[in-house]
Length: 170
Image (tube, rainbow, N blue to C red; front, side, top):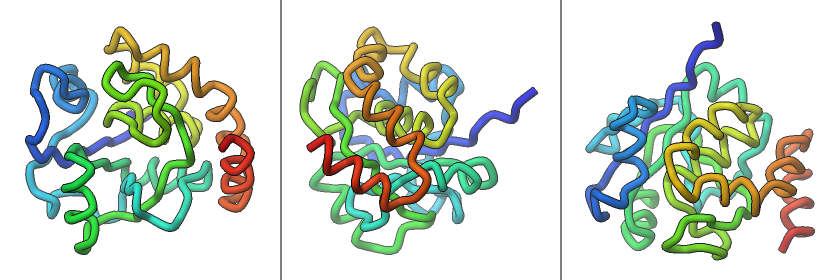
């Protein structure tokens, strides 16, 4: 049996709990929520939209060994939090399009579950990505509108390939 990917999310409590994708994932036992940045795993891959290093399939080994981490907070707050030292190896997801009802069709404005699922998919954990998204009525939409992108990113050999692919999609 394959070991489950360890996923930890810092939850800032800034969203509507009824619409919060991270809280729903926690209720289903798929992620662990922490309420302080310092509790994020030290060597996990941290999804950071301000990182200058692109997320790629090369991050798979680190995810297997140390886990995947994300922040669930407003964009304004994220920049303030991430400008400080945050545990983890920061990576920026390549361009993906939101499938959630709030930001549908907007590039890079992903919900927490979309960011996590995108990273898992690109790193080769496709079943786990589908499992996370299956909890949401619109989850399949994210996969459908990003299918070509996700498949291309997942086949990339190096980070520079991700950047080239991303430019082609923009």
